[in-house]
Length: 234
Image 1 (tube, rainbow, N blue to C red):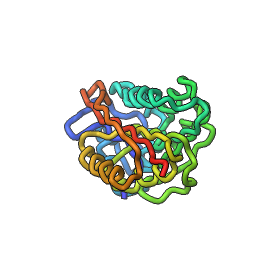
Image 2 (tube, rainbow, N blue to C red):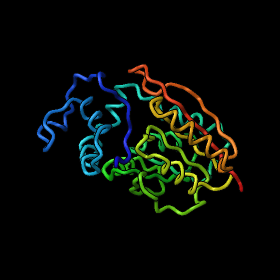
Image 3 (tube, one colour):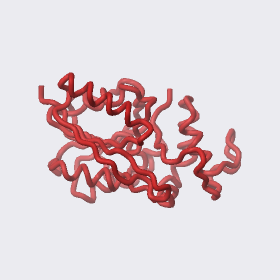
Image 4 (spheres, rainbow, N blue to C red):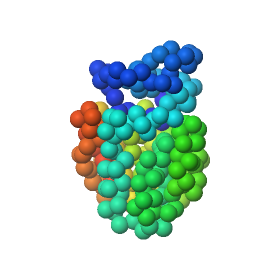
């Protein structure tokens, strides 16, 4: 099973700059950044994912800046339009190094909490000092968060088909009735997400939802779907 990762590069997209932390890292010899990302996408080994993010955590933000990663800004912009109170308890699922949390804090949200699979990424996020709590989480499994415990959830650059139905199921369980969730989804996974949304609407689990197709990674001309959904009050 694969856990949390951010897919922003596909086979054929090359970065000629070798990643400085990869040289000499056992068991990974010198790899280009593109190779690191493709390895994260392909692996089902939790320990390999953990190891690769340990290598990448320190330069993650810089590397994504080079690729024009705008998904956090787009996602937060959509989140702000939902008229969620500034003091609402917000969970950043798959917070990584805290890019989304930093933007939310700048927008006035002061009750932010985050989770991620990688402890090393969480350590970087903690340095931003915008989260009230940060915990390790594996989104392929049931989560240890209480039901109906957060007012809003945001999850940008996280969704993958390997989460199957568990991710949205657990996010909705955590969300308070009437609460909103915003998450991004690359086109590769959209059909699966669309089917899940139809099922959730049919079951009465969500009151309403909306979908926006917008920029994701400017350097690659990549776009993504940004889905907003409101949990039903019943």
